[in-house]
Length: 219
Image 1 (cartoon, one colour):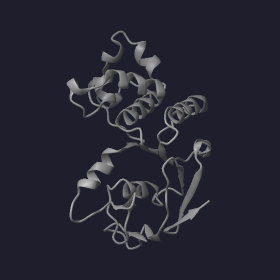
Image 2 (cartoon, rainbow, N blue to C red; image 1 turned 120 degrees about the vertical axis):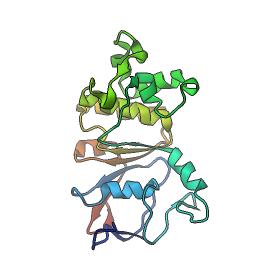
Image 3 (cartoon, rainbow, N blue to C red; image 1 turned 45 degrees about the horizontal axis):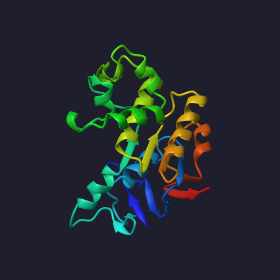
């Protein structure tokens, strides 16, 4: 029974919505631009708090006003790949294991997720390999390379729950298919939320929800 409205808006984005997602579901989130697709995943990830109603993860309240311990744990268990991915000036290793202290980085995991994201061959072709420098905001990378690197980063940080917000928009259909197949082969129980304007991307989903007039419509 979630209700959510932005402070400067008269009309709620969501008006008394309810739905369930099960572990291993691949959920397509559809709807017109500005309808609330990104808002929905921000609510699911705990980045936004509903005005009323409750979100439960395995029967635990996400936005517990008494403690944020579970909320922080939940956020750390999922990874978000958006259209605009930030890259710092640093090596491929540092950008994939973003936020991890250098001495704590698991290089084998960096390489494994790079293979899943179809970026390993590109990185390995560089003179310094994974120690090659990525410019700030990935200025020395193409759009598709940025997206594959962003997916590798997401997979490094989470193999449980992924949120793709137009995460493969710059990829050709063959590369996209290989990446999805790689991800699902590595973990059949991974839960995935997909926002995309390309219907092709929804081929990898088993659940379809549309946002319309502040409501969730299961399709």
